[in-house]
Image 1 (cartoon, rainbow, N blue to C red):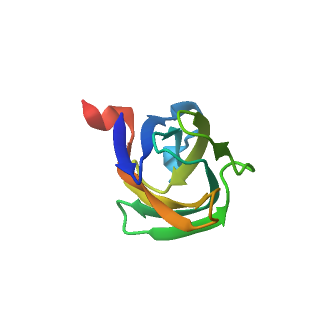
Image 2: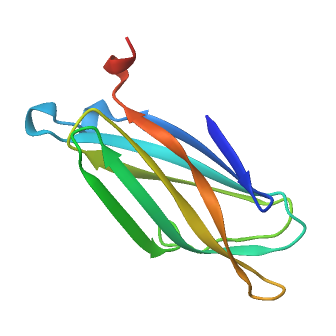
Length: 128
């Protein structure tokens, strides 16, 4: 598990290769990742947007921006957490993702960025 804290918001990431949804003969490798967002600050915050940088070992690079995460804009009071699972496909069996969430402090509507730590996307057989 990879973790990082920014402005009192802790992001934890776990990643899994999904062999059953991958098709290496067609350069299609599927990965799932689970992210836990914990509010360890002393204010309530809402996740407004996400920004991803996705890198593939064959040299592909893409950016993904969007509202919230998996259709939600969770609001986290101090001490609360939110967890979600999503996925990413690559054209090779290795790569990585990193990015940030734009969050809004409830008390003054101030926006701030929370880093999502870089995590590797790697097929299980690469680890042997």
